[in-house]
Image (cartoon, rainbow, N blue to C red):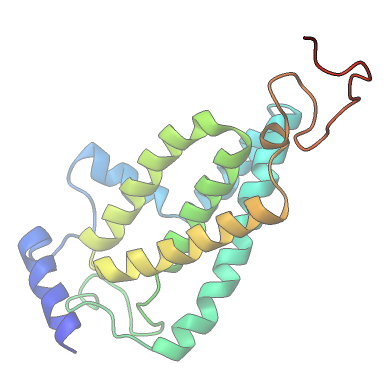
Length: 191
């Protein structure tokens, strides 16, 4: 209860009563980016860029699906109330606030897709930050809800890397698979 009061004070300092729609172009972009359908559209577009893009879209989508499934039981156990003023923003008390499913969804997609195509990390990080700020600004989530959803996303992406590393991570500089010793020179080292 004390944590909730502290977060309410923090949110009051950051956003006051909040706003349902963003007032700046960046805020409006964040409102769009928090929509899961947009992330699915991005995965579809990414899959059309070739084999590497298909692997990135598949890994990102798989990580996203697992993270969304994992956050649901946590919501049922925690049952945290939404931030004060969320009803005024049009959100009913239907679901628990902790952890954020939007965050688990988009951050796990970003981390998964970036494992296959590392340069994607920069634009997708900016997109997820905009989405997460939008969730706080519109009083749909507390900051700790975002952190909780992020922790789920990081755990899922780390597990995906451990279970099935991306192709590029399994290669050495000379193009051979890591861990492959190749043939030993029978003559031994030169003296």
